[in-house]
Length: 608
Image (cartoon, rainbow, N blue to C red; front, side, top):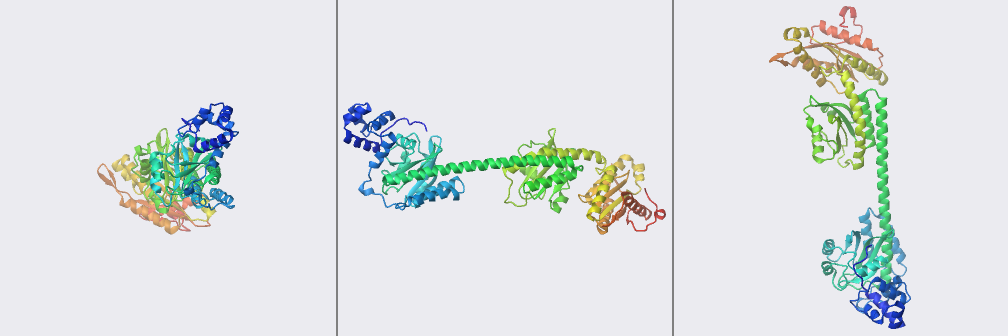
């Protein structure tokens, strides 16, 4: 606490000084204090302003410590007959109960404001005051935190205190008592603690009891209570002592609450750090253990969704030249969104290339959300970059509108960005090596690897598996009549049809010049035939515009099904689909044929 600009002797100090004079005499008191009798007389004048050293000397000369001398003066002040204190409800053994009631506030309080409110309520209900307020130190001023005046102009007093907060150094009398951790009564209008605007609302002449709040010997605020403008005084020494005890307890409770809040904050910070380390370790482990990038993405998204209690996650690869977002991994997406987000076209590069350091920026967040049609609920959408260019998009979401992502969760997501970037770059390299440049479908090598994996899964899980082989009919005529560039454009359009007609988990591949294959996991005969017929019809209906000419082709499709429980080697599975394709060619082309058990390869032939 900073020293006040001036000092004055309080009325209570003067009362104690007069008692000492009556006992010792002015000359003897002055001699012991090292002062002249005139200086002692001046200390009793209403406008007297001796320094603290003079006051301490007078107290010592009277045989008291300064603190005891001030307390004695307070006890000598008796309330006037017309302002006699009422019978306090906490008397007759109830003081301990009052303090226990205040102490219980700590256990019941939900935050600092609630605790301050409960303390002031105790002053009203348990001590019988008609108005009470609690102020906390802010700079050199005391800012009103909670104010209660049930039967008065509470709003007016609150506004006056907010506009003119009490200044700690404005009134030396208050400062001195607070420095000694003592409560004191002040008469409104006779002191400078309250601003004139506040005095008018408080009521001139009314007596307000003030008690300091300390937290580990640090002054943090004050309690104030009275009976209003027309009420009695504060109640004398007994009431002030009780208010001191409550203020001491309140300061301890506020300190404990702040310490508890600090411990909670540090625990939360530690929890965030622990979660960040866990995320880094788990995601790194997934990247190192899982060879298939798409599977790694699904596992990473599943782990992050579980760690942050999210309902779904997604990871897109951005094709810069085409302006497309391709969904390469997801977790928990609804089937409709899975299909809708499989390929998002028309995504501007400048939107994704914006600095991704602040994904919570409202405008940026809204722009990224608009890229994902059907996205509802709280979601964190984050851009992945490499060499200052956008390479992908990922995020987590919740369906519950009442459960937004908190700042700590967003920090964990930011930690995961680096691992997701590593996974995405792995996918990009893998896709470059396993994607046909013309059709954007898988290469033959990737198809063979994927088919072997799906065969293992089908055998292990007991699911059906479909395999389609298709060939463009009379494709040589397109190259011969219109050139190879026209043929390339026709094949590129055929690749788009295959992607549009298949599911996200299906594998579409270009296995030869104009030969293609589609792996259909968890697909029985009926579903596979429907998919094949959809592809056939869509290809037949589509025209490729090349230099003003509409070029049309048809495809022949051969289908083989691995039934649950069957155990076929990859070569046999391919042979069956190949025989069915040959049958479709021999049967007139532009048709779908399914492999039939007992089909004679020599009779029907093969395209292998």
